[in-house]
Amino acid sequence: MLLVCQFQLVRLEELYYEANAFIQYELVQSVQEMEVLSLKEQAARLILMESQSECSLLHRALALHPAVADMLSLAGRCAVCSQAFLTTWLECVQFVNLKKDMKMRNSQSIPVRVLLCSYSCFNQSGHMYYGVASV
Image 1: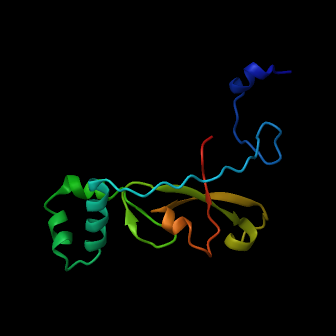
Image 2: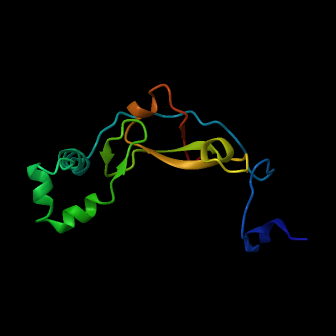
Image 3: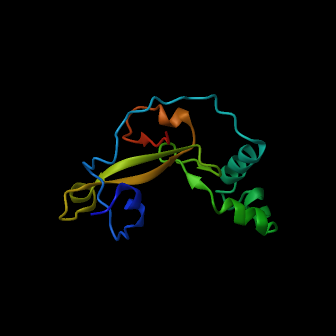
């Protein structure tokens, strides 16, 4: 029998945490602050938007600046509005049913990481994304 203080020493290959007494489920109220983007983020979003067109001057200029192109290659896409962003504004999860959504035999629902660019997108109706918060 393991003592509670030795729990972290157990080598795990898989961990099923559903209905686990060690996990407390508490809803956390979202604190929405005014979205103030850094100058770097504003410039990155503009460049990412403009560089989508291969005819764009910014698209052609990226070839001359590989360091900037490398940094922008780390950009994400908002799951709601599909706009590109450099810095993750809000990390969410969406629960995907393996049987229904992925045509697998298992009917389990699993959380899938989803990124959003703003609280404006998070507050839009019609999506099933849940914000992830650390307490």
